[in-house]
Amino acid sequence: MTMTDTEHPLSDLFGLTGRTAIVTGASSGLGLGFATTLAAAGATVYAAARRLDRLQQLAEKYPAIVPVRCDVTDDANRRDLVDQAFSGTGRVDVLVNNAGMAGPPDAEQETHEGFSAILDLNLLAGFHLSTYLAGRLGDDATASIINIASVIGLVSTAPIGGASYAASKAGTLGMTRELAGQWGRRGIRVNAVVPGWFDTEMTDGLFTNDKSAGWVRRNTMLGRGG
Image (cartoon, one colour):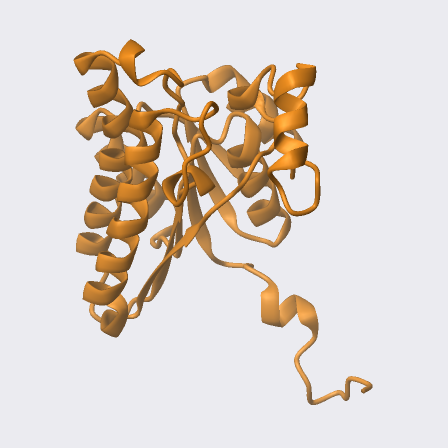
């Protein structure tokens, strides 16, 4: 099929020119990829992380990226992040709740404090950012909230993974379903992305160790990481 003059070009269908996005955990790994992809599609991206120097380097390459130092486990930081995006552009169209960390793979090594810290970052931070954004949107505003879960929230990947991480990502999936149900009729779409194994800073050593790399090859359908 050829595109006629009356049809929308792909840039109109998938472009984000004039839109505003927030991406947490944007200084490395998947978050960095999300931020740069959204910026390349035309969005103004408020890239949030604790490591401001990395975000500033990213913004030098992508003028559409606005670096914001933010600890998403801090409620004041969360509110400031959303407020800054609204103050800068007057709107927020996309929120990517990506910030997260892994815990120890052995359940007996998990401490009460460590388990709680994983839940605070991987689950509660995204919930509170989402509710604060929803509260700021007008009656006729639409938005897309994307929660980054994990295959570990669906199945056991022992001996790789961890109980606190699995709990946080399973909770993310449940939270996503509930918020989608509550907010869908308001025009707020809530979805989850469920990645498998990617060679990122968080999985440091997974792909360079023969034993763990072999485990990934055996337990993925394509026989490789993402």
